[in-house]
Image 1 (cartoon, rainbow, N blue to C red):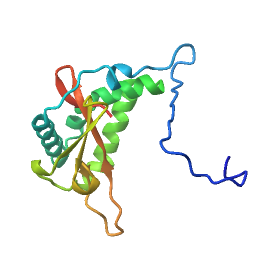
Image 2 (spheres, rainbow, N blue to C red):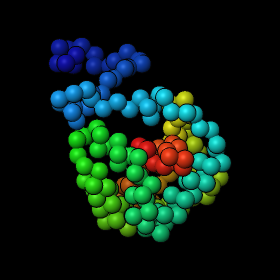
Image 3 (cartoon, one colour):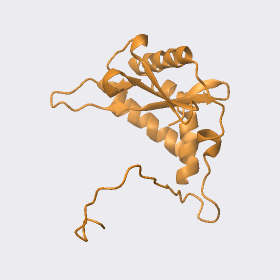
Length: 164
């Protein structure tokens, strides 16, 4: 709107955005504060790197079912947010992994290349590789394009899992 009125479209920093989910029009929107604000902090960097290697090995083995099992908390969150069934998201993720992402082959990496980045006060960890690469990323195609799967993990039910 600012641009349409001839004003500079730049915004002041920092920006604050509110995202309202409409999964339940009859009641309050889903609340993720239990995951994003109230969960206990976790800071075992060695365990995070071990988990990254587990995910790498599943991807290199093209084990879509194994990766989908690691995605269960993310699947539950998506179902809460978007008023779809868990099966819908589970099947959609499995199909995308099995037919598009995994067949392209990920770039292999070693444990010492994993860069855990703390989010939400150590409640969630973004697993990355040097240079801002996603943990699971395909090698560049001839045209330079690649596919990436950003991985955010946290302890859920006593084990690290992909949560976003």
